[in-house]
Image (cartoon, rainbow, N blue to C red; front, side, top):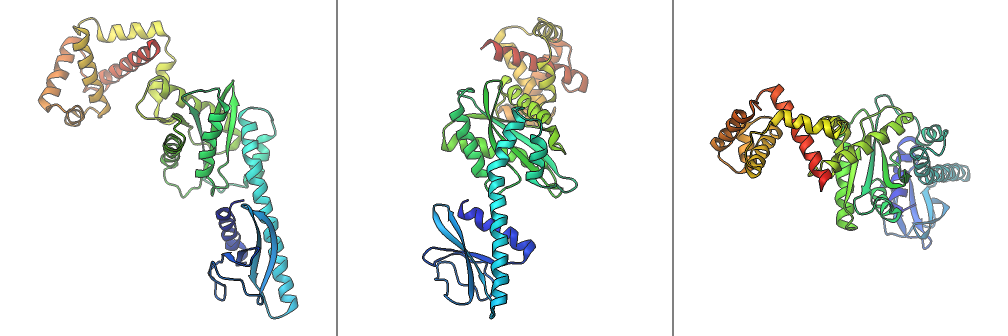
Length: 361
């Protein structure tokens, strides 16, 4: 376990046990002290008297011992030593958790064991009422069948979640493709767990791209309350990932909850989609270049929640130009994009065109 992780665990243990423990190396140099009265400063030599020590063994590449403030009598020091032994046991359990949780998560996602969910629940511990989970899966754009790239992505994600013991990270292989997966756990105090999960996804994608120069897409599942829903969450995250990539959306992280229309369009057979586009736009849009300009204008207008001023700003054109193009589109197609019904119909047709275009590339 790394030194930062040990310190975090000691602070966590101190919160419920009240034991103020520090860390010292083999030369007696204090690596961490809790800041309580009569404790030495970090970097100082641990006094030979007044403290009880207990070897912790090799940690982060060096021999480390625990220490705590002693008492004036042997019985008191024995009690402190016993408390330190309990701390080492707790640290050992958490170290085992860090090793086993990722393997169990991978086993559940790969459907290698039916008992994996129960074991994972036991390992992660009971969740308080109102806890919500979300699953993130990341996949390399370069080679989906390259385990090494998936492990690189997983290593970056593991570093990001290093202090989050209830958020295991694993690399799994499903249907011949490799993914890095993160099980995020949000307590009831997190007001918007969807936004928090998306922020984690963006951090993973940006860090992998910056440090390993591997372009990745990340899919985020809906929130779920029980780990038995993990397989369904994986299907959702994968659906978000593949749908976002298929529509060539500008962002690289996709939330299942936010891709409702895109997922619906993916279920439409190609022939049906082509007929729907023909029925919606007809053959009156004119030249290909002119029609592309009109369709792009309409798309930006819909993306801006039917706000002509915002759409004009987004396209760097005058508002009057935006109004003229929308009126021209309505005259050619008979569709008023500012109305809910026509706007929805046009948006679906545009998504079908976008999907057909990405498939033909």
